[in-house]
Length: 132
Length: 276
Image 1 (tube, each protein chain N blue to C red):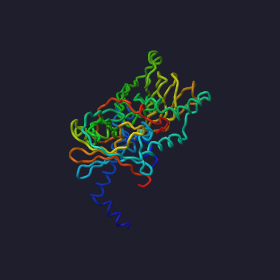
Image 2: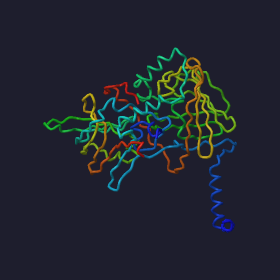
Image 3: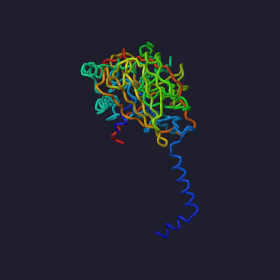
Image 4: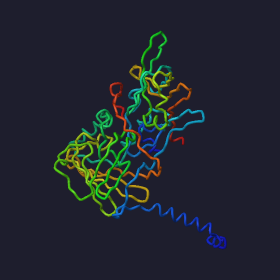
């Protein structure tokens, strides 16, 4: 069980990992309020496929006629790749994001789930390793 | 029962099965190159490599993260606890203790790998692909986890010695030269910078660090360990926890593209002292 815990979060999700030496980028609660999940829909304006975290940027109608560009920190690039998702993340398409909001109020979210234009939903779930 | 066993051994099908099992046992023997050394060539995976995504019939995908109490906030926090609890620690000279403790607790953004710089040798761990020739070893490292970026090392095994230009360099990965001690490949590396860390908990080192890696193959498993000699900072040599890798027998194995890394979180973090 310990070995499962000894890995980076965005690293671990979804692909072959190297437990022995991998480490995390940083604790997510340093930046995000992991007790809250907010949901919004927006039009993808940019997909940045970089390490250690890819970023998605979406134009979001905030409800008062204002369009704001919000950012989403994704699960690891390798995880997206291995799941064959990169060409399903197209600029101009509409996506729904569920994410942990930033603690400092900036419009940057840690992705918990993304719903693609075809309705498929990609989720990042946390399962208690001791429950297995 | 005895009769049954006797009959079984006389059965051609059983004999064929035994022959097959014997063949499998042979396959687990350590392969050797023409010069008699163990053949370390191949793609290598962590022993406990797992795939953690699943797709249902409708095409929905789950990326699963083990986190205590199903709380993502525990994941990296617990990682930090486990790292600090490791009994195998380098023993620094007392004049460095304050600095190491400070880096451990406050060094999140100082840790080179946080800002996409190399993990370096030995923190990078064992190679992910090895190409062995009679005179040199080629080590290839894929970006796995947050230990990156992808990199390579060319390690002569032809008996040469380090050049002054290598000894006097200040590099992330050092310059390794290998030799065989029995069936163990021993690699001695020098020429390091003093920016890389040798461990997560703020473990730094000097320019004069020497790293000795030992790699041996048993069947389809390689055993890697590394010892750090740095008398300027350490009271005694420190051997990292050994790592085992298993042969990736997937004939379609490949490395994904080495994508650049850009750190962007630091300026948005409310509490940069939360390590994990």
